[in-house]
Image 1 (tube, rainbow, N blue to C red):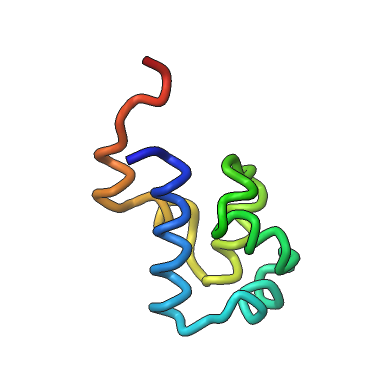
Image 2: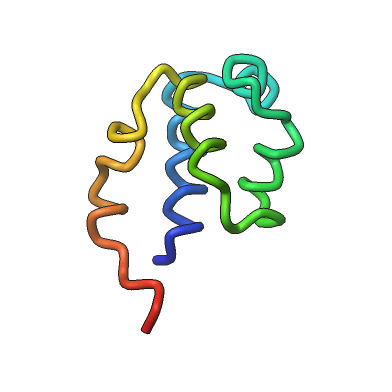
Length: 80
């Protein structure tokens, strides 16, 4: 699995767990809905750390919480 897919999957899972729609997450995080959609639907494959931090704020979690999953621990090296 690549990093982009892991981030996308984590965002989807957190939206489901927190029962947040894209628009509600946008409101809570101050990230435009179009930015969130671009990440989720593949138009943006490299979201910045500041954007991810803002999304985490919207979820009410830290960046450490966001990345503290087996999926991220088991990522393959991007540069081969």
